[in-house]
Image (cartoon, rainbow, N blue to C red; front, top):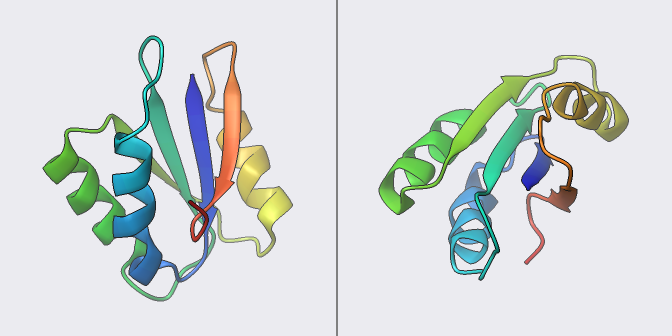
Length: 92
């Protein structure tokens, strides 16, 4: 399963969201892709640091064209699993 998180300036939400995802009970391997949608803050850096601390398999992609659909389309192009879940960066 792949979890896609489209995020723009969400450095403040990344820790809580990724911590919540790490605490879920999944069957099989899970990879997380954070699509940084033109953030001007440390969204990508924070996501990487939290993922490392929690032992999550996480990639960060950058989409500079504004809009959640652009971000998710970039993320979908990188998915190699049969199941894809999308969540917002500030949703538990």
